Amino acid sequence: MILISFILIIVLTIIAFIVYLRIILKKIDPKYFLKYMKENDDFAFSLKRNNIIECSINSQKKLVLASTVKIIIAIEFAEQISKEKINPKTNISLDLLDVFYLPKTDGGAHPEWINYLKVNNLIQNNQVNIVEIAKGMINFSSNANTEFLINELGLHNINNQLKKLNLNDHDPLFNFVSSVMIPAYLLSKEPSLTKKSLKKRMIAMSKREYEDLSKEINSALLQSKLKEVKKKVIPMSENLQKNWSDRLPKSTSNEYLRIMSILNDKQIFNNTMQEVLDKLMEQLMEHPNNSEWLKHAGQKGGSTLFVITNATYVTDKENNKTEIVFFANNLSYLEYMKLKINMNNFILNLLKDVNFRNEFTIINKKRIC
Image (cartoon, rainbow, N blue to C red; front, side):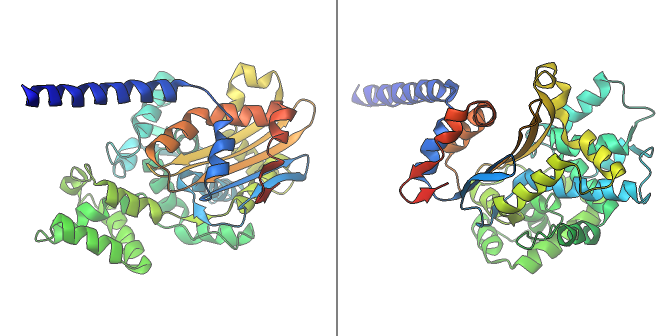
C-alpha cells in the first residue's frame, strides 16, 4: 500500500510539473530576454539603429552560430551567380539532395521544404531549380540543401568569402552537416567501441581529425556508401549532441551585425548579387502584414538543443534602419524554449517600441549599452 501511494505521488508530481511547464512555455513575454541577459553571460547581443550602435553586449565573444552561418553560404552563392559560375536556371535532381538528408536530425526542415515545393508546383521531373535549393537552405534551414551547396560552391570559396567580408573572428566552415554522422560512422568502422569509449573518443578528438572525418563522410555519402549508417545516426545521446553543437562554426555578434548592415544598406554588393540575396534572405516580405510597414527585411536564425541564434535586418517605411543580432549558447531546456517562443516578439518590440529598446540602456551595473 505504501509503495502504491509513493508511485501515485511521483506520477502526480510529474503531471503537475508537465502542466507547469506548459503554462510557462505558453506565456508570451519578450522581456524574458532582459531577464535572461541579467542572469547569464554566455550570450551576445548587438543592436544598431540608423547607423548608431545602441546596445553591444559581449559583441566580441565567439559563440556557436548554428544555422545562422548559412548566411555566408548564401553570400557566396549570390556571388557565384553574379560571376556566372552558377547558372540560376540550373535544375537539380532531388535524389542528389536526398544523399545528404539525415532523417530526424533537422527538426523536419527538409520534409517541410519538399512539401512547400509540391504545394507550389516547383518540382518538375523530380528536379528543382538551384535557387529554390538556396532558398530552402535559408527559409527552411534544410541541412541537406546546405551540404549540397557547400559541395557545389566549394569550401575553399566559401571560406575565402570570410576574408572578402573581413570577418577575422569567424571560424572557417567545414562539412558540419556530415559531422552529425561521426559517432555512427565510427561505430560502423569500429564495432568494438562501447558507448563510454565512443564518448571519450569524441571528446578527445582534435579539430583536425573531426573535420577530416566530416569530409570523409561527405565523400562517402556522395558515393552512396553509407545508407545503413544513415539509419543509425539517431538516437544520439545528449552528450554526443552537445559535442557536435560545441564544434559548430563560431563568430561574434559584432561581425554578424556588420553583415546585416551590408544586407540592409544594399550598397556593397553588385546588383545581381543583391537581387539574389534579396530573394534568399527576405522571406519576411512575403507576408502582407510586413509589407504594410516595411520596405525590406531579412533574417536567419539557428538552433541546436543548447544554442539559439538570430540575425535580422529591417528598413521600415519611415526609412529607419535596424540590425539585431542575438546569440545564446549552453542553454538549459527551459531557457532554450522560452527564448525560442519569445524571439519574434522580442525582435518586433525592439523594432516598434522605443520604450522597450530603452530598457536595454542599462541591463545591470556591469553591462551598459
